[in-house]
Image 1: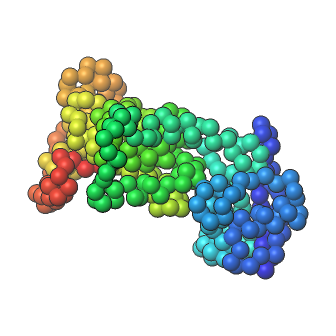
Image 2: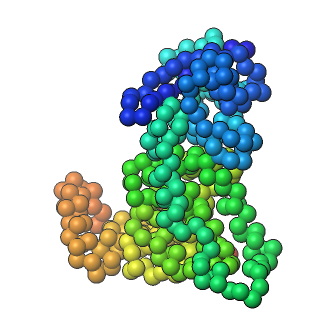
Image 3: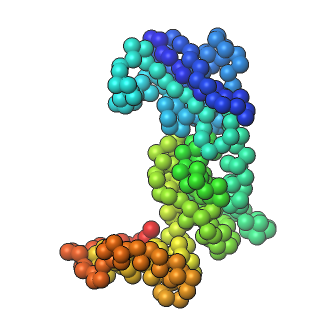
Length: 337
């Protein structure tokens, strides 16, 4: 069958343009197979990365029909089947199927489908993705782990650093200081590693501002596009749980936000927003600047009749409290994110 490939091409520091190619493809052909045929048979100037062709190296990550994926993993048949459930903007059915290919997001384009991944690697380095040097100085024996200890590293160890999660990250798009889901997934691998002796310092670093775990918007895009099921958001949540277990509510606003939210839901079934603002932003009336910052919002709410003078607990509050306490007890944690 014939398939139209619309490829977003872009020389460095230039505006992108769409170039169209028609490829005779089989359903089983991968997107990378088709790109190779375009380069070999139609246009040798097309630039893209590739290497193993077996979903191992992560080199061929790109955006395929609007989502980041590996070109060697996605095939024409499955991609066209997925597109059938997405109506075209014009509401028309194309007689010849189309596949759009674009470079990864959140990274500058070098040429065509090749992006500059410097920020990706620099942010990975920022979380110190290696077992601490203190642990490596033990000379007596090799670093032994039980099967249970090693199993905690399996999921994050599957990461091939393809950049798909980084490309789709909403937080990274609006906050350049956020290190990204790939780095934080690797960060949890360090926290979970029984051979590492720097856990406390790591948690302090990952807890800092919005560049660490608190910068995540929990949009789930990273989990949805990861080709290796690393589930970066799940790993970020695990780091948050470790931080919350080590910290008090007055240590930072991010920590208060999580702890106060759970406490208020346990108390009333839903959030008493009056108390939420005072306890989180105002730090239980201890943060004068925070309280002053709340004043304009409070006045606007009063003027518009949107400031509740009382709070009524929701129905089923006791059941909700029991459920939360059961989860906390089961997980051995004082709180869950």
